[in-house]
Length: 387
Image 1 (cartoon, helix red, strand yellow):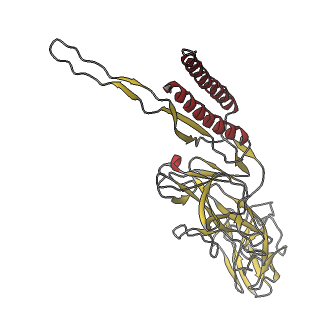
Image 2 (cartoon, helix red, strand yellow):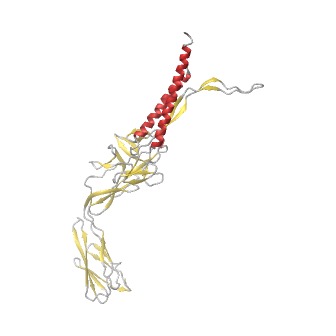
Image 3 (tube, one colour):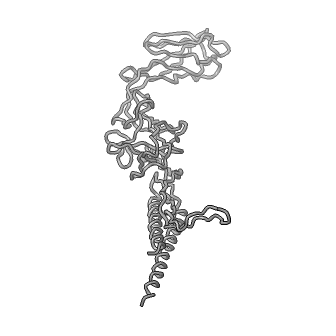
């Protein structure tokens, strides 16, 4: 049989594979985190018709004569170019800007993905859209230790921020030096005990000939502030029960009365209200008492040869012997990308290129079919030699 017949068949098969890969790319043009594939062709083993000859004496050298036996698929390569960002506004949606993958655990296997559409399930675990468990580090007492092995990110339902007693307050502003002797200024602030119960801390400022006296009536703490050119000659700090009252920033210029208790470090207990994820993958919770606290951190993974990863479905990949081992790290560190919260990485498929590839594959398929048709006509002529 004619070699060209089988070459045409190999062309049909190879270009069909190209059509399959291109069609899959086009079908996933709107799949978040999808990475397109491209087909590489190579020629099949060539049959030697005549061996090469060595130059000798009056006879020149002769090049080998070979006839190719068709085409085959040399490889299907995954393109890991960055996809465009699609803003969603969801706190759980993450996009990797740069290299890296998210690690997720599914059915006991660790897989890797660029699709960052995450949320929390009913058990408080961070999961992907298909229910795979996102890997990272859960904070202990507000502290994340990336040196530990990664695990499921879990934030318990109804998580509370414990009450924190007030131990320090800060007073700022100005007491007017032009006030009359005997004038009083009263300032209050809400403070908290160890159980989170709120009480009021009250300071009374009384104008004297020498400056201002300050008292706290509950504990009986008191002190005197004297000023020179509007500044305290001896900065004052009061110990009002278990609360340190810092008055060192109070000034005494003329005409302006702005003194106020501006800060205190206590808080009542509060439940988790919302969360945000920073560019380094830190999950920061906001509680009902106004406090913010680190809850967890999302891990990123890189590979020595990302093209060696095997597609596992669901925009996920698994490591192979040629991808190298997974290198776990933190976002925004050297070698790892940063995270953009409230956005997803879209497919990196270029439709204009894919439709061009469709035309190329179609014409290649068509040309290979013509090879078979022509070979068939030659065979027909041969059979017609005997009538």
